[in-house]
Amino acid sequence: MNFETASLTTSSLSCDAQAEQTDYSIYRMVSDGNRIGDVMPYYDSITSSFYVYYLKDIWNDAINKRHPWYGFKTNDFYSYSELSAGEILSCSTNGCSQNFALGTGNIIKKGNKYYAFYTGHNPNYPSSCVTKKEGVMLATSTSLNANFTHNSSFTTIYPPTGQGFDENDNFRDPYVLWDSGSSQYIMLVSARKNVSGTWKGVIAKYTSTNLLNWNYQGVLYDGGTQNFFMMETPEIFKIGSTYYLIFSDINSKYLYYRKSNSINGTWSLPSGSDRFEGTGFYAAKTATDGIDRYIFAWNNILTGNTDAGSWGWGGNLAVHKLYQKSNGDLAVAIPHTLKNKMETTNYTPVQNSQWGNITPLSGGLSYQLSSPADFDVANIIYVPINLDNYKISASVSFSNCNKDFGFMIGACDGYENFYSLRFVPSQNRFSLDKTVRSELTSNTVAYNDVPYSFSPNTLYDIQIVIENSILTVYINNEVALTNRVYKATNTNWGIFTDNSTASFYDIKVVNP
Image 1 (cartoon, rainbow, N blue to C red):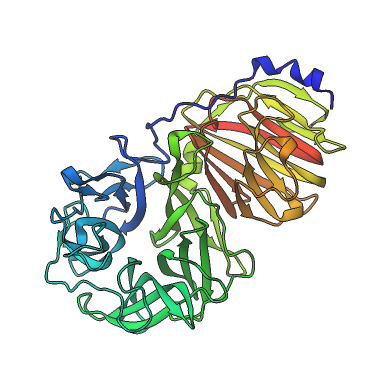
Image 2 (spheres, one colour):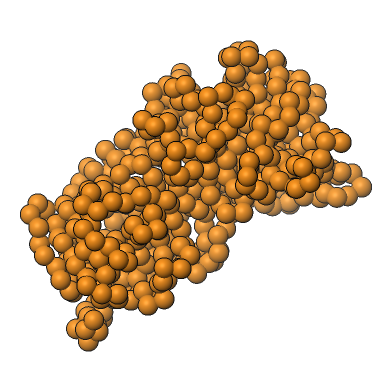
């Protein structure tokens, strides 16, 4: 590549990461600047709204705020109001109480009462008065927008004794649902257990007829041939005749799912990949309005609010539409209400420069980029987009790919120093990589990725939603990749090919 020619434009490029913002509307955080943790969506048919409860990322012993529950309300996934009741579920002030700190759970309605099952987490374990670190507890309310009152008469559920469980820790994230087939409630709990001599994360099952008295019914799922340390925030839901079990792996940070024709299992892998997202969409739960199902999670921060930081707990709300494909596998798409809102105003991208074999194509901003060798990066770079939030879209295809092609983010130049949103057909994945181009090899472990099979001469619909430091890519409205990228906005961006020939059709930028 002619580095001298490429370097002529670098002085005009902006690639510095922005200072982190707190003014999110799509990917909500708390208006007081606090992040959110494990989310618990509930659809209210009376108000036609989703209530999205969450662990507020406060851990302050002095004021007894250790991940209390708060909530948002929305009906469109781009405008959220904070619940006027404020703190929905509070921590105990007693350092010996099981609910000295709170963990996640879910809310279910019976009659005119709402039951919130939640994790009581006491970080003072072990001590003279705290012998169990985690247990399942109950609080109730007559309103979704009111403080839930801890039910002191409810017997806290702890791991079964004498059956190989971790009896003092790792017992959390209850999820309760109604099973019409057996006319009883089912509770899932994340736990750890010795399974045939091997410690594994498992999902325990309990049943009840009244939500107050629960009976242990064994292990619903133990990961099969895989060994997960903890399968966090499990949930079962049904679409059509198929039951789905979802959970988040505490180690890899991936969201996985399994399928069954029975609510009791057995649970099998899907036909395709068993995940449709990356590491930036954690502790997911779903809710349906009776027409569409949506999946809610949080996108993690990076420590220090820098792109070099490590994965950190807590972040911003992220939501996808979730649907069933014809083969019974699950897929995700941008919520239609958010898509329509984002496409309100057209924004014309301004080109900064281009290099390499670029052929204009008919129809909007459309180009074929061809690169004949490794690191001979054909590219088009655009000037930064100075908007609070926006969506980039294009249809993309390739005729050959010996390495990769895709979108550039935070471009310091057009050949080496930029973040790559990469199509990697040889590895059946789409990934975000922050590695400079000269260090990318076929053995590079992706910074964040989602499995997807790409075929040549096939059009793929790409939509990239950006707000502050959050960037979500939707591929063919089948899989998504949600990321924390502090260089996402107000930096140069573009398209590229490396040892590949790819076409980008009708590149558009739109905003609310």
